[in-house]
Amino acid sequence: MSGTRIGRDLIARANARDERHHRRDFQALGEWLDRRGIDIRQIVAAAARFEVAVPSWGFAQGGTRFGRFPIAGEPRDITERLFDAAVVQDLTGVTPRVSLHIPWDTPRDPKGLQRLAGQLGLGFDAMNSNTFQDQPGQPHSYKFGSLSHTDGAVRRQAIEHNLACIAIGRALGSKALTVWLADGGSFPGQQHLRHALDRVVDSLENIYTALPRDWRLFTEHKPFEPAFYATVIQDWGTSLMIAQALGPQALCLVDLGHHLPNCNLEQVVARLIAANRLGGFHFNDSKYADDDLSAGSIKPYQLFLVFNELVDAEGEPALRRSRPAFRPRHMIDQSHNHKDPIEDLMLSAVEIHRACVKAWLVDRRALAAYQEANDVVMAERTLKTAFETDVSPILAEVRLRRGAALDPIAVYRQSGYRQQQARARQPSLGSHLNI
Image 1 (cartoon, rainbow, N blue to C red):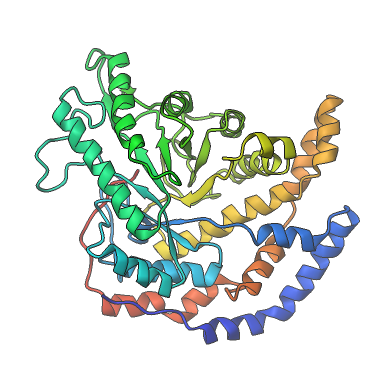
Image 2 (image 1 turned 30 degrees about the vertical axis):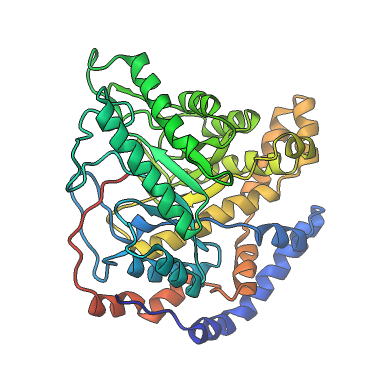
């Protein structure tokens, strides 16, 4: 195991150097918001409640389906990944939980791993099962499906894997299981379309029955790849059907890259909120399909519009009373070749936080009035005013109050953490598929 932390003294020195300029920026933004009738202190308080989980598999350079180019100092096991996750949390202050992918990161000693996470100031988010790859030693192949397979023995193997994920998660203090299936067909006639879905629901019922009372089951949809003709859980509607068939602990997870081009993603979010089945998000960004790019790097306005729906729902008392389960989880899910993974995760965490804070700036009373009056221009302008506001001083203030870095990337590079790990860790030659 190789692990170090970025020293608090280094963060404090960097913050002391930058704080004078930050105070000026924060005061200027506060005065500008005050003219709009917004108290910056209330926005900071709302922003301080934000958290997003990081993926254990995101700390190695994942690359594309054609290959990957490892970066020096990649973590070789889950303990080293936790140290890298602690760096992201120490510098951004908004990523206190790690989501594990099993069996990629199956801990030998779950309780020991939980103790280490606690020492690093971390906890565990949703467990992610993997039945889209064959693992060494498994008796049955998932080449033609897992929870939807025509062979009951294959389905039972996939069910048992998910039950094992729950058992590991309970030992770690997790409260959710995320299921994404590659099941489907690449050619017409390959599988019976209705029966395949029936088998998935039946298999998930076996998993759902084993859920602890305080757990939730998230089903994740994806329109294609690797099933290019008919993916079994291909859209949010099918995911919703499954959740409703299973019960109240089953919810839908929205991956921002798992939609066809030009999909109205914020409307999908609104529909799932209305159905009380929005479980959470895998945040990333895409230009063409499931590109797994850094969150906010391609479509920052779409990311803001997603949070606009979330903040709107959170602020509606009647909605909160009728939908007590509305507490969607936030997690980053990205993987690519070209950036240092730690820097990439910090960038995404900040951009997701930024979109959330901007959504808190929307004048909801004015927006509702313009919508009722069918004043299209002013309604759009109300959203754009919030989106175009530079909330960087608010994000920095939250980090400063949490003891994190005013400028996370600068402190990370100054620390030399990547170079230290490159010397301490032997090169990792493993390779993960993107999901």
